[in-house]
Length: 240
Ligand SMILES: Cc1cc2nc3c(=O)[nH]c(=O)nc-3n(C[C@H](O)[C@H](O)[C@H](O)COP(=O)(O)OP(=O)(O)OC[C@H]3O[C@@H](n4cnc5c(N)ncnc54)[C@H](O)[C@@H]3O)c2cc1C
Image (cartoon, rainbow, N blue to C red):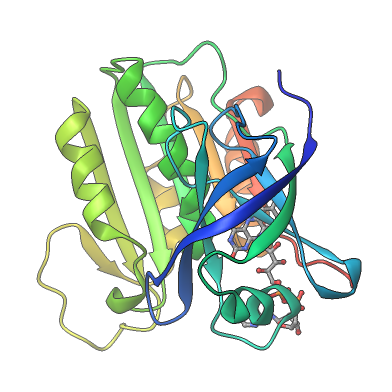
């Protein structure tokens, strides 16, 4: 287990992933390498000595650089700071942190619930599932407001091609009146997928908006899914 440490890192790449999310690639300067378990996050030092937590979205095998998917469509400390960063700028991060990671014993059915940038730690975890040659069923329920706000859909295609049984169902909460023709796209909230969750042997990983995380985990608990099979990360907003 790697303990969190302070890293200086530099901005190698910065590009819009959607209209509201920036993909930020940082390479480590000092120390020059970081090992992390997929699912972990780093704290990015923002102005006024304040920090914002961002989950690592990239492949854990790359120990020289990491990628973050950061909400930058609003007026916030982290959002504004990341928008202001330029290539080669140096930043400070502390990590890897958190208790959100794939459990050691994986059953033959994994279910992932995400909203928005909540998909970031799952992208890192899916790289590990590929390396583990995981052959069980992987279901991803991914909620966004509109189709245009789905983060890095091409990566989902990649995971679908690499993993034996990988399905993504998209839930679009603000396209309720728009005709949807793709079989894996539904109108409404991602919590609608709960009707289909009745496997008591599956592991459930839930990440994103804290209200969604609470709702889904409470619902699964009440259904009788054992607590140790419900693994959560709520993207709670910082109080400062
Ligand atoms: C463990 C953990 C992992 C996280 N991982 C990620 C991640 O991978 N990517 C990521 O983007 N965030 C992630 N977050 C959330 C992140 O740390 C920030 O809290 C969030 O991005 C808002 O920070 P900010 O500084 O931009 O806004 P703040 O300065 O904290 O907030 C300013 C105002 O903006 C509002 N606001 C905040 N977010 C939004 C939004 N998305 N849309 C509209 N208004 C908003 C706030 O309610 C507040 O009124 C994570 C949080 C935790 C706890």
